[in-house]
Length: 567
Ligand code: NOJ
Ligand code: NOJ
Image (cartoon, rainbow, N blue to C red; front, side, top):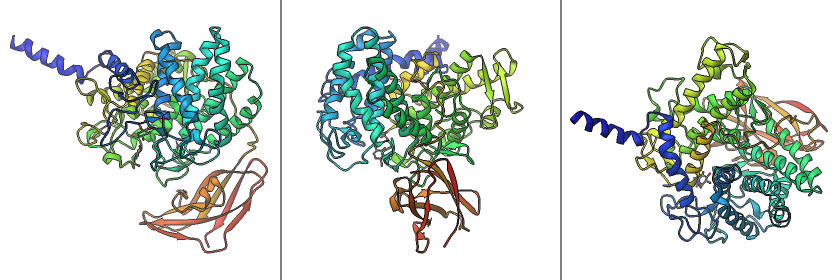
């Protein structure tokens, strides 16, 4: 009897700290769905005061106050709900989706500190939950919002169009979608605050989701016969795809998350980008950073490894096993902690990769992805492994276990009632920061779907190639030799947006991979005369090169390397 009680006790606590992924998903999935719905006005039980269709980020009003609506969080949340509706998983969601779209169409028209609907206001990141502008100081604009919102609405509108609801789509939905797509086409090359609302530069996440939105927008506009903006969208999408390539750090083998900010650039920004631009028909394409691409796998390893020795709760975990991960290693928000949505995103990328390998019947290991795969079999070499081979089975089953480990890490730090906050502490895994974070729940829904092998349609990534001439930019590599002190870095800034407009604070950090040569590749306007300088930063001290400014004229197309000596 005693033994039985002890066993029952164990079973109870195991509800929170599940030992199997399937047990955790079974208990957490309904909590996550209910958690999302509770945070949507007006019916949601935790969203009192939120207008119809408005998604609150969290009910928390102090430490932090998240009782606002963010375009990013709301759109990612509704993407998950729209996928469930369109794929027949939950037919009850339709009126909620309609309410969301109405709410967003009101926010589009709400003049705010970023501008009016026609002067950049669509880049405003957050609003009050009664659909008025938030006028306090904030990191604005954040240009990912229109991309995420239009992608979600296009998914729904495509479904409605194909079910015969054509006039509603043309008359009511297209005008909302077109505003967002035009915003992307106009502003993608302007600097933006990143998704973490901290760095004003260019951001891989933002560029990647903008690219996806425009491509999906082109297919959709053609479908419904709204062809006039298509050729501009095509030109811009090609240029965005060019630009997307320039974030790659070829010495560190990862995607640099932001062009500014002076951090390592290792950031879940990039993992989230891979997951939210997953196209199950695009194979393991690296130019669009598909989850199974060599670049995205190499990047994933670098990102995950940056947290291994950073958080106490990761201590003692083997170097090939899952750990808790956060936004980026330098994060100090609430002390710098693991985030549920970041740790889930790692698992989701891996599950997405497994889906594609299984459907194409092979996996490929390149020089770039070798280090990732050698975590699971230190003897494996580059090559193509057919799904019948033992190497394929060994690797894919180890990778599934690895992926499951990230879900189980979050499971371990999920309280018994299943509620998901924004973060859990790096010291002992206690939930911290905003409670019942809508985005945490939405990220649970999407990773659980991926774990089950579910995919939600293509956006047109298959077969894309980087244009041979990038009309709005050319890749310029700058190199300068400089002997630095330990902890001192070399930066570049200059007269154009892409060089951060002479800002010392946002100057672009250069790579010392070939020390004492410092280098960086940036994407600059073609046939343009540009002035710039190098500077160093050391213990907060900025040292500029002497006058005069350096000057180059960029080529009309292609790329160039500029070798300078510090003066
Ligand atoms: C609030 C933002 O939402 C968060 O992302 C950021 O880390 C903090 N402000 C600190 O800048
Ligand atoms: C802070 C996060 O950094 C940001 O991405 C998010 O939009 C807000 N919190 C609201 O959840």
